[in-house]
Image 1 (spheres, rainbow, N blue to C red):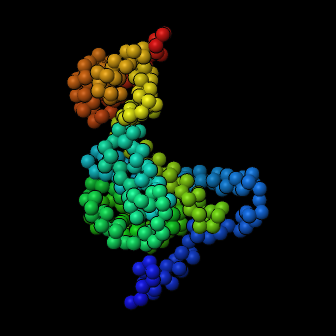
Image 2: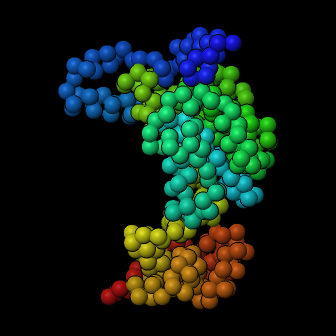
Image 3: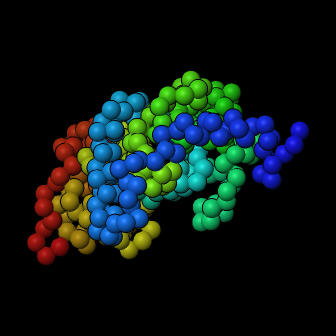
Length: 330
């Protein structure tokens, strides 16, 4: 069988061409056919108008997004992982989301994983053609040891990216829960996963440039899924990121403010509490509010599945996140 330069069967190319031609994300919007005649202000105005339409699209799928978030939370509680798989912009968004979870929520680096077609090099330089390769996707899912406790989410604006489809198929074969997030009407790919989330944002201002609305709406969904899952597994107290990793000046300052805000102690006292707690904000807060030492605070948190509010209630002290204002001179 003859092969193209990309290694794809020439008989497959007409099939792919027909499939791509029918995608909303590949179509052009006639309202923007004068784009190259506009001023910069008019161009950004058009983009703004298109982006404004994302919110109603999101509202229509909030139930499905919540379902996916609950799956992720269940996976975390059972020692499983959340894996994002994509190519191009979608892949980069998944890797970005995974990278931001440890510093924000204190998760182990392997709890949320981003997989991108073409590997790490593709993060900073586009490598065309890797999205069409199926075997590397299957191989990566096997390398990760994906199994029944995991949730694998495919990110594909077009719905049909071969790399993503292959990864999802392999994950499903290994009994993981699977979801597909895309920006087109239902297709055969939807029936091959446990959950399909369709983000119908329509054609882009520049036809086919799915780094725009499609990329923006996917990023919002990723924010929703990871944030909800982290809240549901005790990594947030009220609306405070009390499991953050303080590895920069900004985050060390945030840690101090969190302890001050939730306990009412002075800045020097907050610093001493953080030092005594090993830099763990939740432990420091519990030590002060419950009047316990580090060992007891850790045990209380462990017995409360990591939920600070529950630990405070177990200790018999008020559990509301906002304590007294910082003392004068703090």
